[in-house]
Image (tube, rainbow, N blue to C red; front, side):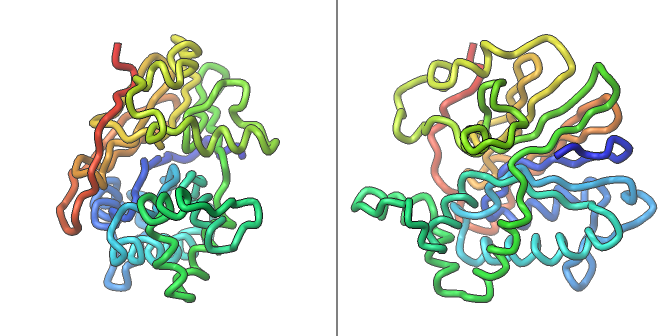
Length: 276
C-alpha cells in the first residue's frame, strides 16, 4: 500500500499494551486526547498521520491490553472519518491471537504451543472471556495491512513492515512474502545465537542510500540503525521506551517516551541488533 506523500507520518514501534506511553508519545506529536479519550485534530496536526507498526496486544497486563484495544479502535474510527489519518500494520502477535481466537484449523495444538500461548499470547484468554473486546480486536485485525510504503521523489522512500525480512520479500503481496514481513526467525528458540548471525540478511543487504526499511518486532534497548535499516522497537513493555520515527518529506527523525510504570514490566534478555 502506497502512502500519500503530502502528509507527515508518525510511525510507532511495538506498543504491547503500553497505552499510557502511547498517549504520551502521541501528545508529544501534537495529538492530545479529550475527555472522551479521542485524539483531537487541530491546526498543528491536521497534516499528520499515525501508523502503528504492529504488536499492540500481548505482554502487557489484561487491563492495559483492554484499554489499548478500546483506544485504538475508537480513534481508528474517529480519525479516519474525513481522510485516512490512522494506519495499522499487522504484527506477529495480532496474527497469532487471531489464529487462536478464530480456532484456525492449521494451528497445531500441542503441550508446547499451549505453554507458548500462556507465555507469549496472554491476550487470547482475555479476548475469549470478553466477547465485546474480541469483536473490537477482530475488526482492527481486518483493518491491518502487512506493509506500507512512502515515496518522496526518486531518491527517498520508506518501506514499513512489522518484522525485518530479506529485500526480495519487501512490499510483496504473496502469502510467503506476507509471512516474512510479519515474523522473522524466532529469537526465543535460538537464545544463544547473536541476532546478527540469526538474521544476517539485515546488515548484508543494508545500503548507503535513502531508501529506508523501518521495522519493529526485535525489542532493543534503543533505536538501532545500520545504513538504511532501522529498528524502532525500543522495548516499552520491558521498562525502556516507546519510540517513533517521524517521516516528513525527505527526512526522518525520532522521538520516544519512557515507560511510566503504570503496569508491571515484562522480562527481557536483549539480543542486540547491529552489534558490530
